[in-house]
Length: 234
Image 1 (spheres, one colour):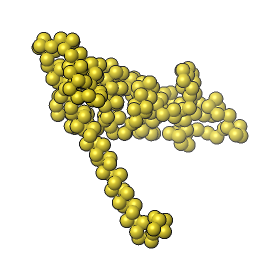
Image 2: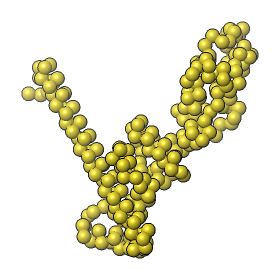
Image 3: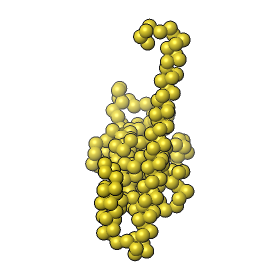
Image 4: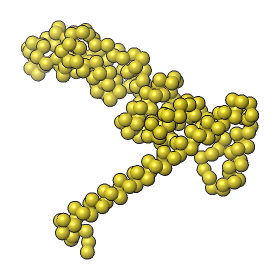
């Protein structure tokens, strides 16, 4: 009997079973990822320790890659380059407690992006935590690096005047986010004047009823004197 012909009660049961399957598949994917990230960290720990104590030179890692390829034909992901990435991964996060707590929440591709583009430890942790919290795809993570999210929100956060902060407590975070989520609709490489005009245009969202009505119908926009005369400096 086709599913479309099943009674409503049965269709609900079918949907519940399909949901169980989807959840189990997701749990299986997460379990595999957890095992892989832990494996890569431990391999990196071993390689880092051997090189640090001068037991191994860089050439030994190449020999290890060849040995693994011969010992386990078809094994992928353990080239010389990737083995050194595992060493870099371990040395970036040497504290073992962070492995199950945070690192296993992201796939290996995300870690490679963060390791390759973050310039300092706090930047790595910033993107690590946000990517896990927001469930970013690898493409979205790369986009956030390109828009310099860390620099804009941590190193050079947007400044809001005391009046704006008093009227709208969340104004600073909204302005800060506007750089990243295209809140202002500005083109790439926009000028400072474009940013200022865009912010002025959006301030009416945070400062309701603080300006007199514009004599021009419809309003002439951000250049309107009735708007700019009541807009605090940001």
